[in-house]
Image (spheres, rainbow, N blue to C red):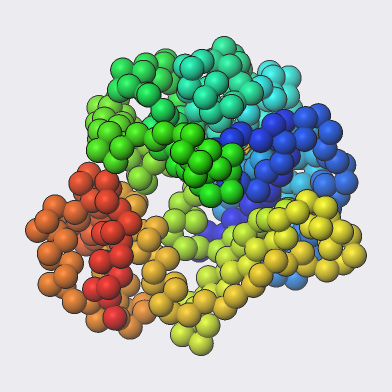
Length: 385
Ligand code: SF4
């Protein structure tokens, strides 16, 4: 069974107005040494749980982990290697903001053990970047995308975003075309969503921010899927496209409901359990970096909440994530594992209406289903009891 470790670095140069991640705009003032030492201490708190466990992936996310020195990253990786038993094909990813890295640092990250980088490009249009409040320019992105290749990374990905105010398909097509120039094997294409608690959420509530209509967004979603599929990328998850063999192993682990330990402020963890006494456990760390560090430094796990999972919650999560995957959900496997009876007439109706398709043994969302994924997932869960 895959098992991952996630490390959250919560610091960013500035806070983007759409971002609802646990991240803090701190300029160049962040306690790198103290935070890194705290991650190492937190790792010790889990030593008994993960000693000799085979680790299939490590992911440094944020925030902006590329703000940290490769030596700090290397220190964390070495300690994980010391405690656990890393798989021979372990994937070790790190998120890069184009403005906060250069060739020297990328070479350092590679020798630190990073095997995959994911770059937050978002767009090659200055208009869109400005609207999104990004610190990187299109030129920063182009430079870093090339430097990543020069540093020797083959497994690399970029994030792009669409659904920005007044965006046309033509502008989005330019972004996609430009992205193809760099020949990256993985592209994540996300629709801008307006989240409560963000600057955009506040402006939206005051009527000061317009968003594209659902019909308009549907056009973008369909266009993106067709464009990237025609360019040789397979849509292996709703927002993720990859050339064969370049799917992100760490994200697959989340989408399949496998186990992972999250370290750092606000990081989430999940331990799957395959018996009916308890179906698993999940917990999250304190979000505030200061409270997180205080707790760990006093020798306490920095828990914000922890919960045992019941069967219904696990099934719902499996459906929620599984239907978004290209491989879909194998109903007979789900029935056997969770002792379920499925009302196949309800599933058949979703197929007849064009929201689901039946692959060899599994069901997955169609293009039409993708557009209304939340409603389809809800109906799918209703059919299981
Ligand atoms: S750089 Fe990324 S994590 Fe940081 S504020 Fe912007 S979107 Fe959020």
